[in-house]
Image (cartoon, rainbow, N blue to C red; front, side, top):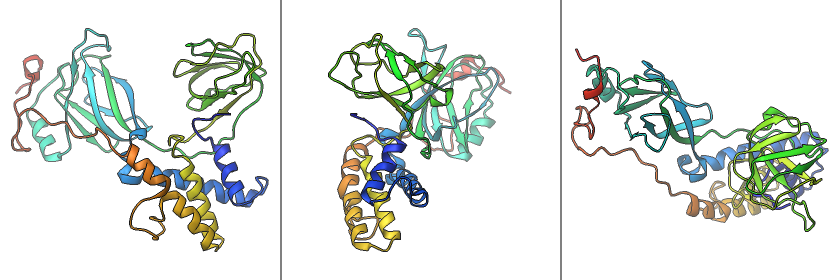
Length: 333
C-alpha cells in the first residue's frame, strides 16, 4: 500500500522491526510508543515549530456584542486572521485586523472606546483567546483563523474490517460493507488499497471529514482515483502524524536511537542519531544532517510574519487606520 503518511500502527511496526522486538512484547512496545510520540513532538517543535506542515486554517463566526473568542483547541498558536463583512461570499469585503501583541498598546486601544462595528481593526491574542476591536456588531460574519496545529499523541491501531463498495472519481462519499465506522474516525486517514484489477483504490491517503454511519463516511478532499462501483476493495483507516511522508521516517530513526540508547548500545544508537539529524541532538555534530536537514531545508521557510500597518509610528500610539472603523462604530464617549 502506497501510504502518503505513516499511521500509528506502521510507525510502531517500523521501530519494532529496527530493534528486532516482537509487537507482542507489551513492555517493549510501550517504550516504543512513548519514543514515537516523543519523537513526533520533538520534530514538530524544531525551529520553534515554524514549519509549513503545521499551519492550518479554521473558520469561526462573529457574535454580536462579543469581544472575546476562544482559539480552537486544535491550535497551539494563532498566527493571523481575516474577517468577512458577511458569511464569506465573493461579494463580501475582507478585513485584515492588525495583530496586537503589546498589552500596553491594547490597553490604549480599549481606552479609545471604539464601540461596536462590523469593520474590525485590531485583534489581540491573550492566552487561548483572541479579542476584536471594535467589538463585532453582527452575528454570523465569517472569521478565518490561521494558526499552528497542536500535535496529538498517536495511540489508535489501524482499522481494516470490511471493504469499500463505492466511491466516485472526484467524489467524497465512501460506502463500505461489513464495516463499523465510528464518528471518532473523523480526522484519521483512509487508504483504499491500490490494485491492477478493476474496483481497486489509488493507494493514496485521504483525510476523513466526517462519518455518516457505520458504512458511510465523507472525505475532506475529493477522491482522485478511478471510480469504484459494487466493489470489495481492501482499505486501511489509520491515525497519522502531521509530519509529511517524505520526512516521517525521522520519527522512526529517533525512536530507534532512543531505544538503543536506553539499552546501553551506544554504537547502534549513534547510527540512528546520524540518520535522524546527523547526530546534532545527541551532540555528535553542531549542524543538522540526515532526514531532519532535508525537512528543515524544504519546510522551514514560512510566510508567517506579523501584519505591518501602512502607517509607521510609536507602538504605544493609536495610528490612523487604512480604513476607518469609528465612522461605523458606536460608543464614543
